[in-house]
Length: 154
Image (cartoon, rainbow, N blue to C red):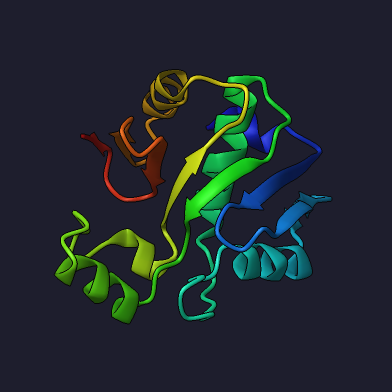
């Protein structure tokens, strides 16, 4: 992850596939995080089912920056799920959605994504190589889960 800190600025782009919102934000520059950009990221990654917003872990944002760099892409991440409220998580569990009861989505430390123009399995391999946390591979649903929990994969 040392390569991330060498960048003079860090920017990410998102395309929220449920709300249609897009965002490109320089979230780190001049040696620090930019609070307004972090708030914009929090908003676009909110629980789209309830509208609830939670602060996304800056380590997750940095992990996404490193992942996009590793993939050699400037495309926006396609967001399937960012923050998920406890109520939404419980509802998805009840509906048999294969959702963990203590999901890191509920604390702003997980995201489900795809990257246009890149194969899903390549995105998974790049995420595994970064060893920044958990990596879940869901080819049938066309997304990769990344989080800042302990390093593991499924």
